[in-house]
Amino acid sequence: MTALSQPLRLSVLPWLNSRPTPDTPERLTLYWNDQPVGEKSWDDTIRPADLYIDVPVSYLVDGQATVTYEVQIYNGVVTASQPLLLTVDRIAPTLGGDEGELQFDTHEVTERYLEQHDDILLGAVPAYAQASAGDKLIYYWDTRPFANQKAGERELTIHDIGKPLLIAFEGELIREREDGERYVHYQIRDRAGNLSPRSRPAVLSIAALPAPRILPGLDVAQAAGAGGRLTLNLDDFSPPLLVQVPACVVIYPEETLTVEWGIPGSADYYCTRTEHPNGERHYEIPLDKVLAQSKRTIRLGYTLVEDGRTSVSTPIELTVKALSRGLPQPSLTGASATGFSLATAPANVPITLGTWPFIQAGQRVSISVTGVLANGAEAPSYHVLVAHAVTERQAEHGIGVGNEATVSKTFLAGLKRLERFTTVAQVSFDDGATWVRFPVLNLTLRD
Image (cartoon, rainbow, N blue to C red; front, side, top):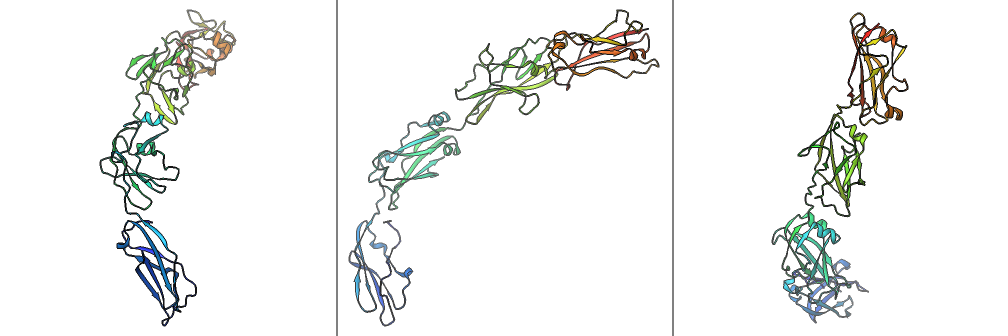
């Protein structure tokens, strides 16, 4: 029975043969240890909700009490109830040893500790006298002394009795209340409602929030520069391009490492998780991805992912300088040191272009011829090739070996004699977005 600071209300069930009238009232009398403590009478129909008597607080002393009641009905017959034995418990639970201080296996709770303990911190409750099913452990996780910031409750069951009592503090709660010195304590409310004193607080040092993880940027051996800004000069570049995750970076076995070239979602993005066979923590960036960044600055870095948590490295900005050496000059069949003669030219004059560094099938080549008309005006460009995709054969032998690149003799015949005309060739490594121009060919046109 719950010990109360207010009168205790006891109710009875309706009795049979109830016919109260003003002349023949009915009466209910309640006895506490044979002493009458309350009485009610009715001279009209009795509502079930009125069938109660409040026991004064003065009777609610600790111990056992025998409660009975008597009913006198309309005809004067008195009937007594069977006795009811009640226990009044006003004694608060007594905490266990050390003022009930919770016992922990560590007083320094870190992010790693929670990772290794299923994201739970267990506190052991010192055994206390007369622990019973129905008792409640009300526990607190305070950010400052005496704050009494409730963290939860745990009700004991019959299976807890006689066993070590543990309170589980979830990692989510610990992180929510942030890092620092924390004061952890509890109270016991027994099944009678009596509340123990608060236990002595256990003082814990918490560092459970994920610490900012500093991941230095990638090393790029073939690039020059410092401070996160590097330059890769394609004139000095020798494939493959390997980037390296610094040896100082701690990578846990559960983590997945991904090297990223460019920004996710962009057209130039590339990522890999496969190490290069010739070096630990080395990762290869494909040649076509490198060449596509000619004349551009790209961001590169790496990520570490574990259980949905992502750590991102310090980004590196890499500027890729375009090729400027070893580029071929286009040539016209029949040209000589003195220029080009129309007299011996075929109807379609072949143009050839040798191979260049890092040539690959799929790169785009454009060739055009310009000059001055007979009237002195600038001639419209003659497009020999427009964003032509290099074939495997051309990647090996160069452009024009199959006479696929020609300029019309008719076009050349329309140009002014003894004036220079120009053949321009250029290559694109990014599907036509940007172009690298080869050395131009200037020839004097003769009859």
